[in-house]
Length: 277
Image (cartoon, rainbow, N blue to C red; front, top):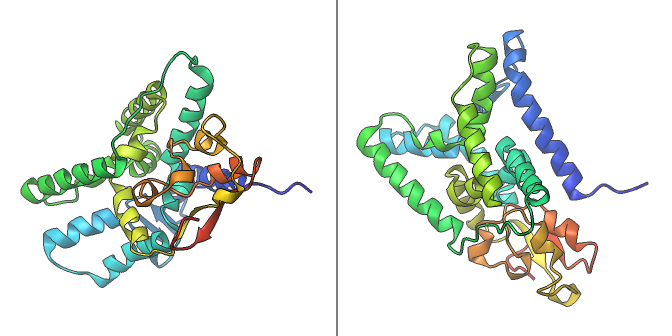
């Protein structure tokens, strides 16, 4: 019996989550309320999971610490501390769309069409975006504003507006424009360089040096500069063989590089370790 790869299980989870947030508004209208909400706040029975970035804005603005609110965001941050930014690669529906568009661009666009190459760290750009967003929030807003840059939130609200309020949200156009830009550039621009939600998840995982990460065993690697399937498999254009603290802020533990590496020397694997090799 053939053993399924990490990528297979990841796709099943991604597609399940994406479909769930399509049909959830319909189920809620029919009286199913055990699960309701969106990617800003999702309620599962008595358990509430909240976007950590939204909780941070509310807490700082009101200067009031709500134990229940902090717990709802803390659960997500604890998961990130242990398993890294798996929300981005295993759960986020926009991440799924972005990966599919990236794969389509590699197949459809001609080889002569060169992808845009960016040398600056995506994490640094996110720091600038988040800093500007927080300044704007404190000066002009009373409600969380940075979450308007949340692609998974917009994804879930598309179907809430469509099935509950009976109209098409502007989010459809916004998401389509971003995906088109990623298709043309052959880069996952939003996830790597813009998404502010991932910032706190990255900070959370860096607080735990033993979080889940991609480990590299140089002695088992038979790849080279011309034969690097692990880097080609990474939709974020990262080279797992040279992961360090800077690049590790951008790796989301999708496992695609591990799957590609198994065809050669099995030099990559998931590990809970302070070191990369």
